[in-house]
Amino acid sequence: MHEMAIASALVEQLARIARENNATRITAAEVHCGILRQVVPEALELAFAAASAESPAAGAVLKIVEQPIVARCRSCQRIFEAAVDNFLCPACQTADVELLAGQDIILQTVTLETSDERTS
Amino acid sequence: MKIKVVESVLKANDAVARENRRRFDAAGVLAVNLMSAPGSGKTALLERTLAGLGPDVRSAVVVGDLQTTRDAERLQNAAQQVVQINTGTGCHLTATQVAEALESLDLQGLHYLFIENVGNLVCPAGFDLGEHVRVALLSTPEGDDKVAKYPTLFLCADTILLTKMDLAAALDYRRARVYEDISRINPRAPVMELSCRTGEGVDRWLTWLNEERRRRIQ
Image (cartoon, rainbow over all chains, first blue to last red; front, side, top):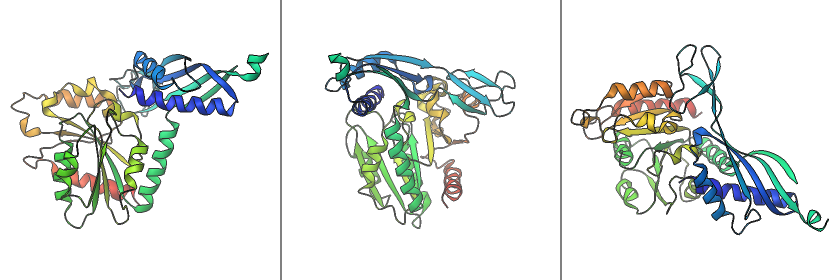
């Protein structure tokens, strides 16, 4: 259940972003999860709801987008989408690859509410 | 108002991990992160390793478990320094927990710091602790199908140790299947067959450790 650790880190990150932007509330966040991180979206949503309860992100809508694994073959330089249990290059059948995407968890966008917005 | 951020969610963990690594580098200690399922022989490997490295090599161990100090007690007499971290419900160690453990360790003069991660085949792979090398263990009783089932831990490993090999025959363990799965996921990692009970493969593992230390620590 590493989703709880990820959710806690996300809540802290969102609280910092809220402070930096003088926001009163975070209403939505979009997170891109590389497939290699093995994040279960439902588990992350649940953990996020629990972890954010007392924070500016309480009640925020969390959009989770799974990111495919993209690899570059070190032998023939071909760039291809790999499966989680198969990194064989479709061209030369070696699995000696450099990972280009699929292993990060990135906070892409945040929708926030400022006090100015509320009064206007 | 919608703003674009594009920032790693684990940025804070990664920053602490970088600081841990800087401290290991400054002290000249090779940090080794041992990852596997519970019961695959991480503590037994450490007992063999610490004995095999001999009295002139100084090592410390950080042990992560949900509960109890049993592993720390087992290793107490084998390593110069041992710190137990109890993660409660946490299924992996984080860089911050390791940084806190470092507060009660003296890194100066150490050759190796072994970090025995919480037994889990999924979660530890996602968290950089600041280690120099990652070691994945897979024991024969877990089955010969686990590399393909839990690929990320094996994908990020610098070496893969197949442990409890003395039981392979009794378990109809298909080595070829394991090697084939690894070849599709992480062909760069050397694979070593070990038995801590018979001592099989332990010398090769110690040689690998020694070479990694020479290569990575200036």
